[in-house]
Image (cartoon, rainbow, N blue to C red; front, side, top):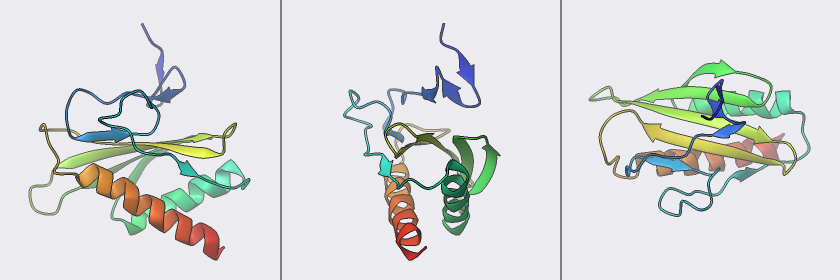
Length: 131
């Protein structure tokens, strides 16, 4: 049995289920769900998480939990009120932000979670350059 703590399983983000409504950068061997992690510079973990918190709020998300290298947030769709979960894990050894975005219900999300990750990546990089 794998240890699950603060949204992480054995220190990493969970693998996506066998549904088309999830993307994750943590498991390269899962090409169906894989997205690239977000690279970041040698800023402090606290600063990086603070910037991610700001970006998530600007994209309409609500941060639910944070720790020294982890952040969990939710996004709720406007019309049907579907909730998607977003998790990020700072990998300080490789200077990347691993990210997982998944719908709570349904099989397909019509690419919404992948688009969210790409929007988050773009806005994060814009803010990082602007600092």
